[in-house]
Image: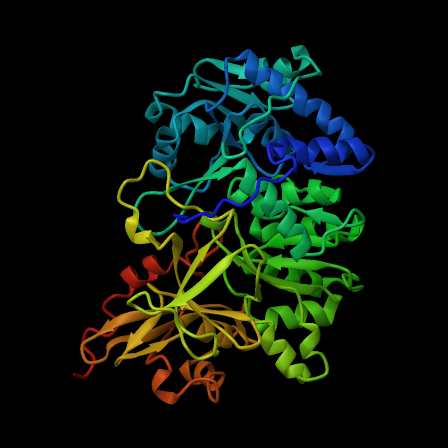
Length: 556
């Protein structure tokens, strides 16, 4: 935690003015009431309304919750897609000093039950299409007082076994359109998001109003978002609030696109809407951007995305993906780095620093796109060795990434044994990386995912991206598997493009010159698909378990 704070001469600034998230939308509506929000309904149709229209519904929703007895510090769960109602409630719930629980609908019933109970959720709002998830959840969450179904259908047409059910739109019709927003202590929780890690129970990350407000300002600056931008929220709002893009759009007064429910195999609707609405900012994981690119390749006329920044997170995108997107559409892949615990922005790769312009080749510029970018102003980053000693920013010294700042957690919610995740007030990310003399930050692996072979480390991330660079490879994962002689050896699991036939020699051919021969995977397995977590990351825990015996009988 922060210590030794020195108190200087008191200022005459409005330091008692609280940074509440409600102010973001309140100020945006005041100045840009006509700005548009375009949303997709459950039936697949697109509609639009304005900031001013949305704000009236935000106030109604806040009054609905107050009418149900929800007040400061109460927790309200939200099971929904990136919908109009989700967007409205993300302002209404925290606006009355309650906590918005972001419920990851891709978690197992067991984990989601744990999250709901651990967060002490009292009411849960659920989209009609997700009622089956709520019904599976209900027997395991006795603290929940009732369920509010969100649908355009009347309640009489909705069949459910849920108890004490209310209809959101009915309640909205009866609610007042005006509200006297409370001034909330800015250190109060705005929302709660639980980690979806592959080990242990989900851990509660509780974002403050202050941290969320400052993060919005930093995010807008980092991606250069302006009032003439159009932002499509592709990343789920139920995880990290779509990487805080709702807040950022309000700070910048940008146009908002809410795509509702979509599937990875049906990303054509996302591309079509990006074209129709001239989207300039969209966020997502490589697992979503790749099928979008595949669809674009089928179009006779390729879209012009030359003004578009694709914010990519969850895992490092392959260089081939970034180059192809640029060559076909002009879109700029902007790699970001962060975590649930960091709201998430820690670093952003928004192109080449002016000081490097004209001094590096085009190939070097593309290679630099593989980096996670430059640390965000307002965040302190340290790279430390196993003993916690700081390592120099020399582009060679690799260590664990530590960070602190106004939107980075200092503890987990109701978790007493979290001391090992912090060091001297810094959150320990569990990531391995390095900082170069020019200031750029490069992530090399997760500590648990780096392959430890013969006393040396092999970056699984870099190897995966090299393999995906093969034109006949659709997806790839590299994991360290226990070996009787070398401690671990890399195993590559490769998903070929449909109809392609590949062998190990084809795969190692793209590793030549980038990896020493001893680093090449001894075994390459070709599979139909790879397991991923709810946020699109490769689930390497599953892969390590499934293939734990691959090298069991290897030569000693």
